[in-house]
Length: 154
Image (cartoon, rainbow, N blue to C red; front, side, top):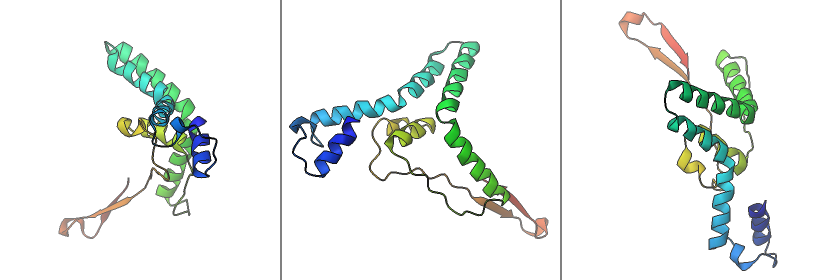
């Protein structure tokens, strides 16, 4: 894409970057903004259809469209992530940490799906990350529990 090409050329000091496209120039900022918005446009459009729908049947139709779109576009990633978290919760996944390498084109839609619409409207800074973590919570009562603990994985 244009943004990545310009950034690579500018960072390597190549003399072929037009002045208006140098980082932090107005045209570059506009191109960056609209390139980022296109990554989340369909998701945000479908989410806005839900808000604008009148009556529960129309809202449910809009929700079904959003679920279908997100399951096709984001489903495989979140399926693998969910499987790993469930396996870890059962104790059947020996790996303590998994790092999935992503770029802004992957992070922006995830942020939109997680409800981070303001953050998803701009390109994430270099080396940004989204952490999906699994915690085990142990709640042990006082005398009434007789030393028993309740376990919950969140």
